[in-house]
Amino acid sequence: MKLRIAKLPGDGIGPEVVDQAVKAVDAVCRRFGHDVQYSFAYVGACAIDRFGNPYPEETHSICMDSDAVLFGAVGDPKYDNNPNSPVRPEQGLLAIRKRLGLYANLRPVETFKSLVDRSPLKTELVDGADFLCVRELTGGMYFGEKGRKDDGNTAYDTCIYSRFEIERILDLAFKYAQRRHKHLTVVDKANVLESSRLWRQVAQEMEPKYPDVNVDYMFVDNAAMQLIRCPKFFDVLVTENTFGDILTDEASCISGSMGLLASASVGEHTSLFEPIHGSYPQAAGKNIANPVAAILSAAMMFEYSFGLMEEGKAIREAVAASIAAGIVTEDLAAGGKAYSTSEVGDWIAKEINK
Image 1 (cartoon, rainbow, N blue to C red):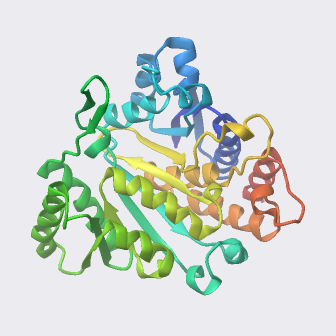
Image 2: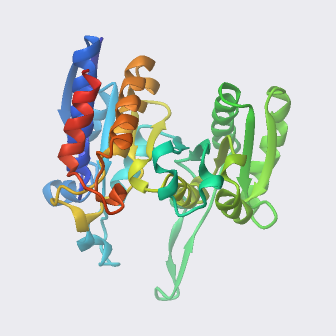
């Protein structure tokens, strides 16, 4: 199979971890006989510096012409520390989601047996945790009307959702629940927010279409507590944009490191695959960042974009082997030997080719 992949490393540690994901992709393609072609493009702060636009038209064209997008991270302190900056790197990520119609973010949360003791939670709580977060990506407060008034002293952000937006993300979540353990948790704040009441209403109307799925409803504050108290309760969790952003980062604690969690953004056009961690500028260029999340994002790319399940499995098995063998970066070394970003990437690529 010929695979056309847009490579958008972005900012901070993005280029370093994407390089390791590319090593894994190349190794899989050699092993299974695929032809891969990469197209590099700018996004985020590096795109602002070069083009004045965090998501230039050239980048969009490359993404549209590709079969999948392998994405790193966006963000730079020089923009984070300037609240008056009119253009921000994060606007590039919002733009790519909106223009590619990527309305669903999929974040699997699972634990590695050899790492359950590294989680800040008790081993008995996290051992065996395995669930999927489905976050709506193109609606809600991040995209609603926003601004300031009263001479800049009053600010507002509007959370707005249409029935269409809610139905399509819930339909996806129901279908993923059917493929897994047939349990769906809808997270909202329906006791306070009108937008959440519409979410709950639509979900209840859709329930009869999926009689094999057990559905429960949870307020977001309770969901935040239950993710820590009993993460093994969840199978598929679906929620709106802002709640999903917060809950999925919280869920990263379950695995023991944000550097272990991959994600996929899917929708109308080219799907995008990225680690959930940010640009981590403090580590940029030091060759110490954990590349596993980016590498597992590549595994998701094979599975979700190309339907190549064996290829994705080969990457996952190599990652699990690296962790079991202690070939890990400093965030997981726990006082033992810490390997560099590139050393971990090299080891995993060689393991794939065994």
